[in-house]
Image (cartoon, rainbow, N blue to C red):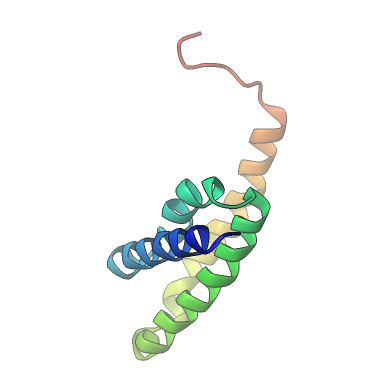
Length: 100
């Protein structure tokens, strides 16, 4: 990658970080919208996964006093039930366009 591409990638990651700082999510949405223009998609995904983990850990460290594990239980139960159901639906249901 040329120096210009590195600078543009850093700018994209900075914008994604700004969105995550404001909204609490979105580093992948913003980053993966633009990084594949600058690098292979597989590289962009790995880069953003590592970066998002580090950024989320940094946010968690600032907010750890407000973390209540008991309030996370329902979220984890819903995630545990919803992911397998969603994967099953994507794998087994027919793909149709909404106008069909």
